[in-house]
Each structure stands twice: as C-alpha cells, then as structure tokens.
Length: 370
Image 1 (tube, rainbow, N blue to C red):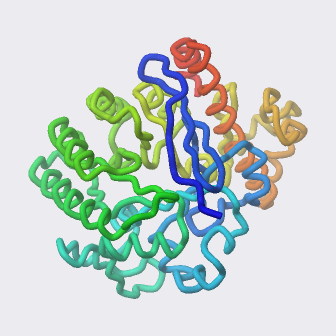
Image 2: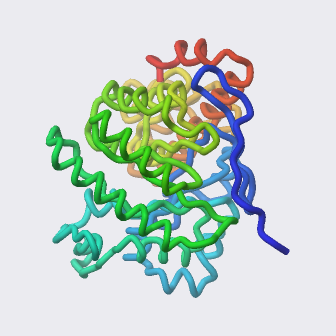
C-alpha cells in the first residue's frame, strides 16, 4: 500500500495566529503543535505510551546525538528510529547544526565538507556535510527532515552573520538535492540571519525559491531576549508562505509560545519541560512552581489542581518536595510528565481559542502568568 503524502492545510486564522493540520502517513498533527524532545531516542524520564497520553502527536530526535550514540547503523539494523524506540508517532529530526555549535569541540566549518568536529563524548572526529546529514536522517526513517545549516552564536557582527546565512543557503540547495523525491516525507528549510531584518528576509526568499515543505526559523534560543525574538518574527510574519507550516526551533517557555503563535508560528520544540522537570521546576496554570522550596514541606495541596490528565494532581507538593530532596527518581518522572502534559494542554487551549476567535484574550490572560 502506498504511503500517504505529507500535506498541510490551515483550518482557521485569528489575525496571524492560525490552527491547521499536518498530514503524515504515521498520523495527523494538529497545529500549533509542541514536539517533546527525544534527543537520544528517548524523551527523558517518560515512556512513549505516557507521551502519547499527554496528547503529543509528534516528537523530535537529533541527528548529531544519534550519529554519535548509538550510531546510525545500529538504529537502521533495528528497522529505523521508530522501531528502535517503539514509537509510532511521526518524528522530526534536527540536522545537528545547532549541536555542532553548542556541544562539540569544533575544529572547522568547511564550505564543501561541512562541519568537521570532535564528539563531545569521546573526542572522535566526524565530518557532517549537508548530504551526510540528509542521508543519516533518511536512514533513521525520519518523517520530517531538516536541512543542514550553520547556527552561529548570537552576535552583532553583521558580516559574520551574513557569511553564515549565505553558507546555510548553499547547504540548503545541497540538502534539497540530497533529499531527492520523498513525497511521504517532508524537508524543511531553515531561515537564518541573526537579528538582522534584511538577512532574515533574504534567507527566507532564497529558501522559497528552492521550495521546501515547511520553513523553520533557526538561530534563535541562542541568547537573545524575548523582545528580540519577537522582533525577528514580526519582520517575517508577512513574508512566510501561508500554505506551508512555520516552525520556531528550540523555543521555548509558555509565554514564548503564546507570543510566537500570535506571530504565525505553527510548530515548537524545546527541552525546557523535560529539563525543568528533572530539576524540580513545574509548569502549571497558576504559574511556575519550584518544588524544592522549603515552603512546600507544609503544603498538602496538589501540584496543579487544574490538571485534567493522568491523575497527576493526586501527588501533593509536600510529597514531591520530599522526592526531590531525597533524590528519588520518581520526582523527576512525575514533574517531567506534568510539564509535558501542561504544554500539550496549553497547545490544545491555544488551538481552541484560535478556532473561537478569542486567541488575543487568551494570550493577554496568560502571557505574563506563564
């Protein structure tokens, strides 16, 4: 039986905020969507079954980490990433460009060879070209593939960002060619250009000429302020193609997401809900809770009485405080699941308010609270 082709359609708009549907052969994804991060073939401290119960419809994996450990051949031998990690949800894989910048002991960026770097794990030397990145992602059997790009650190050096953006465009063309004809999968381009309006605009326009299945805004979540991020999105929102999904990479807090949806973004990923969960920070409808705080030792109220899923509200703050202060792994598991569940509840409410034409009211109610 032929696999279903990748497709996207906008269902309802409320100014720039929009709700839509991404169709894949592994299932549909309602947008705006949040993708839990499964960097190393696992969403930390959670089972895939629990991730699905939160309402998550897609997860993210990472090329850089998976090529280092356990290695592409091992995953391919297991039948691909979905079978390897027992996940029947669609999977988007990041190309690895951000991790090369942030984690590895980088030796060299070569226009033709790609990124030449040493593993942050054992120092082994790797060369990740645009073609190799695409090849790895296809061998992982990713459903949404990201082009290889260079993700520079935040800087006010215009010429440096311009050079990096132009390199990313060159690699985008090579990525598209390497991807070939895979209509049941998708290839997303990545808009670079730092905080410079003209570079971002040029990057997008050149990517649109190459023609991708979706367009991601990269190079943010690298130290800029929220207002700077919003400024980049404000400058792009009129130019982004309406018929393609818009993905803001590596973002962010609940308020980041609310502000980005207001500016036309459809897809998000971030380690924040899982990383925060492991360190004792919970996201709730009443704001953030640092469960390690001593004041919760005498608080027998639930973590979030408004939680509608998992009966997570049967655990008291007092008990969770105890788990974290005794380094019990159950505490990390409960808070991580709470946070992912909260993010998915947030996305559901965002979609419902867009459908009802009340998104601005919802945005204004929670933008400073969450």
